[in-house]
Image (cartoon, each protein chain N blue to C red):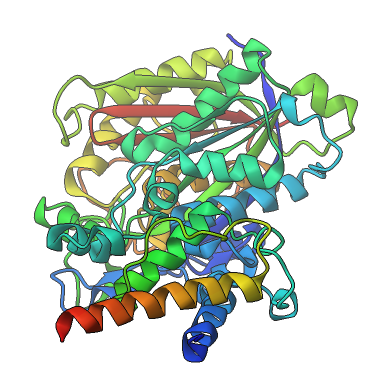
Length: 92
Length: 405
């Protein structure tokens, strides 16, 4: 299941941290069109690790320049939910 | 003697003035920019000359701040202004004939949070932008990307003279025929917590915390150190034939440059100013002039006890009776690489407008300093040639000679 609050948070990062114009943030825009390159993608993962305590692998399957924003944020959110689940399971 | 190169565009990002016009008006007003700095609250020196975050963000445009430190942002804004001022159009120019040289003294100092993560072993939480945002060479790199300048790109790092040595190297690139145009200057943000603590601990900063506006006082008897600042200055330099061929407005000519080392001490100037004197003499000779033909000196004037005395002795040694002197750091503080580049821009403007800006806070001139220091208000003067003098830790000395076109 997709973590809707996390998708909203990632959208806010694109808007506020990367300063992408709100009108450019369309669900069907690709990361390439948004100028989210591999350095920017690594920045997203570092912010999640620093501020949310979510550690993701450096590359996620299906995530690249041609991925749309909607698909990309869903892939990151699903991976984050899985990581959280594993952490929660380990804690139990 | 070398051939002259033309100065055809200017750009400045300074505390109290983003853009050449605002910064120059602030300098002519003689009103200091030093004030309490919220980022330095609780520190031994809690004041600086600061550029407002909102002002620089508005000029920079979207999408650059997350991966660039302030010195890069200042370089980009000043470079764009200088190129537009030169009426050059990056979409039309032959980018392979355009070079970029941006001096940077030090960087990677503004990231206590990242160093904390390093110390705590939280490696995955460190920003991947840390290298791209902080290395000195990134200023020239980002300006080259922003403008599509694909000629020689270079960073000079000679401490407080980094902007001036960049301008000297740009002239050599043009003299050699390596390119036709160089976008050149210096950029720095030294007024962060690291800078304030480190320069204070070595005794270089003014501690006049009860009256920050009066703290930077070059050549004044009551000076007690410099005030940290930030900013950038950029000039467009062109081979003279190139500038004439496109009917560019020529503000001034860069007629001569020279560098010299003190070979004396890590941070103290040679007490007689011998290295500075050698750079001044060599630059004036490179311009094909004699010291008597220099009409004005834009001094380094940091407001430290030792530096101002040594610079005074250097000027006496070269000129006998030196021409009128001014020190821009009274208004803008010490922006390291950005400072020497801004001072080159202001030297050009003095020539262009035939006016010498005042030295702020010169209330009682040090009786040991026998110079005609312009103070109180701007002074009109007939200026045909102006020297911009810079000295730095490590015994770096750079002199630039600008002449009327």
